[in-house]
Image 1 (tube, one colour):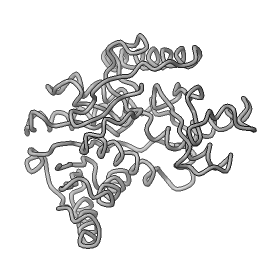
Image 2: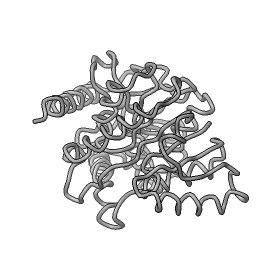
Image 3: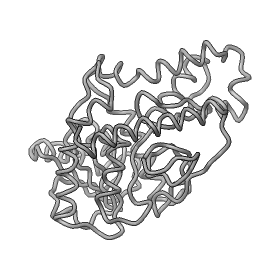
Image 4: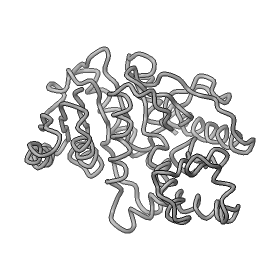
Length: 310
């Protein structure tokens, strides 16, 4: 599989490239960035380690050289400020994203190519990409709440002193202010997390609050997220490349799951070689399902503003 990372010179793009190199699954990684020298520097640095790790072909390129890519990972975007919500980014990032989509359409791509949106606000941009590009259903998806989910699991594990690999929990909905924690299905070692001593409502609210604020916390402390988001991106790419049929909380256009239509957001989603294979409407607590519908309404209101230029 050949992957082109648009925005590959930036922190998120280069960290994603490193995570993919470490994974050793994709065979070719192209970094594409408006700052060509930065992209070339990152590609060269990664290439220097290729003989010890991964062995992929890694280089900086352009849209012409990207035409035969199996997947385009779009990480390019303007950075969120500490006190700025992800949706506040929309007016600053939609124009940039539209230019990227124009370039993809103008320069061409494989009919079977997949578009994997990471740039924020990811749910809005995923909807825009699906509407703009003539690709098969399921071939446009966004990172959605993948990063929120892995943060959520790690924070739960740290607080309760469990191995993080044994904690399973999901964040669904919008990758932003209206995200929804799914405590109803959270487990540790296969057992219900809500039955663990200390995992009461106060604990749940505290952990979710920190999860929700993690993006701003990382920006405040180090300038922006990188390593964890790179790992989240690699997990999605590997699920597709290896046809894992893995259930992950990625964002994609909704066609009725939980009564949600005509917007992209994260629901339980099966991923495989054809991209988004299906959405799974697994039973949730009523308040969780209501939260998902609130997320959809919030995103639709924002999408209407994008469509009208308001």
